[in-house]
Length: 114
Length: 112
Image (cartoon, chains in turn yellow, purple):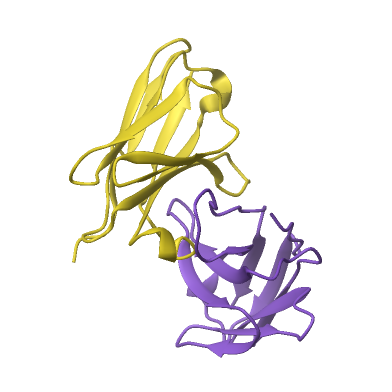
């Protein structure tokens, strides 16, 4: 059974640029959630997708967007990057809405904005 | 969503039992208590979840008093590899728009 994978591992961008982060969910999982984790903080919820539809959104501006594909993999897009967007971006998958509290996290993508 | 409060950091020697207490005074009837563990440069990992009384698995035990306003994660005989940040989360186990809400967690340092 393959776990949650994310790409790329690390990324360096400059202010104003756009970035796309990718996540492959664990086999059999149809729900994907994205989190942003700043240094020294706990992960903060960005949004969640369930069977290709957005299922909830945290307190992030519209320049954070995403989508989920038919194979349940997902992308997180961030436009007009700001310095404060530097963080570890985590993707988590789960087997469905009934298992929202047991999510399986990937290793994350470390984004640095210069 | 119920807010949680837990110590910022704890130190322990190898082989000791570690108890991390989390306060959640505003826990709702439908809320479960869940603990995650996070190692540096890794995503959080589910440890244990409970609703009331006591839950035990191969990794930890979770003690929840009758009023459910607090909970204690117990790690038996910790080793250096248990050094990590431990997060206490409170929320419904089922339902839409109920994301995991992480606080700052408790940074556990295990010393040889």
